[in-house]
Amino acid sequence: KKEEEKKEEKVVYQAPIITATEVKVNVSMPEVAERAAKTGADGVGLLRAEHMILGLGKHPKKILEEEGREALIEALMEGIRKVADAFYPRPVTYRTLDAPTDEFRGLEGGENEPIEHNPMLGWRGIRRGLDEPEILKCELEAIKRLREEGYKNIEVMIPLVTYVDEVRKFKEIAKEVGLELGKDIKFGVMVETPAAALIIEDLIKEGIDFVSLGTNDLTQYTLAIDRNNELVSKYYKEDHPAVLKLMKYVIETCKKNGVKTSICGQAGSRPHIVEKLIEWGIDSVSANIDAVDTIRRVVARTERKIILEHIRKK
Ligand code: PEP
Ligand code: MG
Image (cartoon, rainbow, N blue to C red; front, side):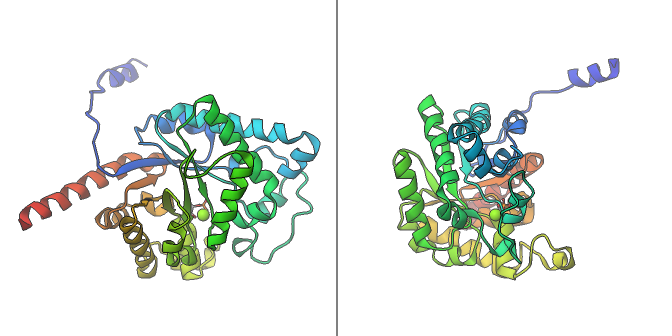
């Protein structure tokens, strides 16, 4: 024990590394919020809703039926509040529910979930959110109430966007709940489909504040490789030239239009990809808890390299 105490004494103060590009952290469970906040991340680039909702063990529709709307709203508020509180005033980007049908089916009351041959190409993300807006409305209501409590650091992000119309409809639903996206609260879209990347100019026209590259899905949809299929995992590469090309196009197009860009897929935890993103001008990178420190250093090193190259050219 003495040895351990000695080790603790030896910890010396280290000046934080300052980077122009924000380095954020991904959070899937409110339970790790405190630990995530201690990494010194500039915010939460992705707060996933799945654990907060599926973690209740019961299908959210069953919760709505048996316990009522308030129960679901309160459960969500409790989870999101933990994260917003740990990070306040640093921004926390809440991504609305994005679970495939096979994950819903495992829950109590999930027997009636439709059976899909390929859930990853199916009824998930914003598609389901718009078809069954009851749950989405509870999520937006929870965010609205938390902002009224003073957690103005919460932002919202739409998963699996493919059509411009999905963004419009999402905004309408938010309005019904009393949230004016882009005015009361910052909102963004995830770029997870090649379609979203290729129509980025049209998505920008919908008044989004930011986009976030969801490279886990963007890779699977660009390469036609199921991210959960081990038989083809060796072909799954986030640095495939096609995926990189889409990312570069999105970053450059957003930059021209004054829209902030970020990444929250696994590629944001990979140094060699992050270096490229910084060179292309991404505004923020969101990494896994354990990668925040390394990514902060990679970002700092790459920024320094860019500045030096610029100075030498003069
Ligand atoms: C992604 O697709 O890159 C992403 C961050 O979302 P998820 O991993 O939850 O699908
Ligand atoms: Mg995704």
